[in-house]
Image 1: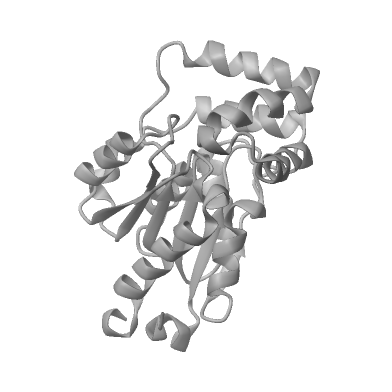
Image 2 (image 1 turned 90 degrees about the vertical axis):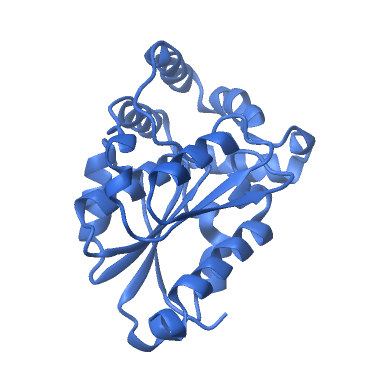
Length: 246
């Protein structure tokens, strides 16, 4: 993995964006893998209140060119960054994410989760996390404990802000065709929340997109299968941003 074009100039920043009530844990494996080759910025979503607002925040926190790497809600933020600053965003990695606007009936379910979070974040984690995972990993206490601890590092107010940001999200499908930078879509075989077909739809709309499918993983693929996800992303970085393509 060379990426000599990026390494030589040090002007491109990998912006690592987690999702709903998530933090740097999600992209920790990737951050470690690229540390010697390029600068990585861990985006903090704890104060964010809208998708567009967080996109503007992360653009403002960095200078120069960007490759935005987003998981779940973070993927929506990454797409919005590309819409707002197409000249700066050189590439996108969109993992376990979606592009559609708010769906009918979604608000009721989301508000129920807000109420649960305000009653007990522990109860929220216990309810929300298992369906997000490959069901073969639900009994993996080390994995579940790690993800639950991440959720509990947030609080009910952060959770509510994130849910409201998702409810007010931009319709990315309306502008995906205008995002011309290279896109890597990372889908997981057992992700029932953001299925492979959803990523295939994005690939059909975006001009320069390719799809990597991670086996034996659910919605939290970067944490469930960190080695496989990291390998897919670093291989893509090498092919699309290596010396020959710099």
